[in-house]
Length: 253
Image 1: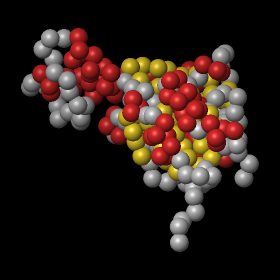
Image 2: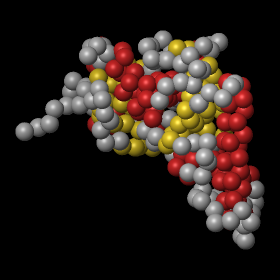
Image 3: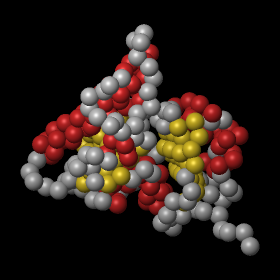
Image 4: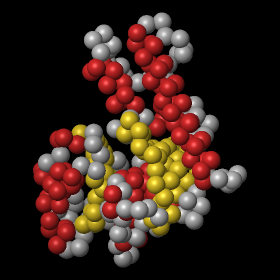
């Protein structure tokens, strides 16, 4: 007997990779990943099953437009939800220009508000590393954007004649005995320092001794957060969880 179709298809289009997963109102199914440049109408069509409601987050306008065309039938039936600041996120927005907030950041805010509460900071280690902040009242109040770890290391490779491209992994020592080891130490230890300093400043600005939930997600979350005591929670699929939560809030049960 064929298993019932999951209610949702969740799609998170980021600059480098796209994650997608079927989901019920309570749980994610198996998460798959595809290089974003490879997305086409056939790829979108292969993701969906008849009757599914689709919740889409995209920071790549060209691919978002392609998804809108690929899922035109679902859109006409009211079964396509594209994340934006006008939806019910379960978190308020206290930000000068809400329409400029990335859809992935809105999904992260929805997820951390529902799963952990407020105040909170989500640190998303993607092509860029983003810090998204919820006030003690549970409102999205802004964030920080810095270059991602891979962007930083690739820049050294591209802009110098002798430095190699490296794959960031945990260094064995801070004193490199080779060019690669020195680059690795600078990348990983330096990046942890960047994250620690930004989190410290955010804590000071939120104020008081209030407990702040700090949740890490994204590709390099496990590597960087593993040795940062400030970051006790790693949730690799937090953005998809946010899409599931937004679906629950905006589609009737």
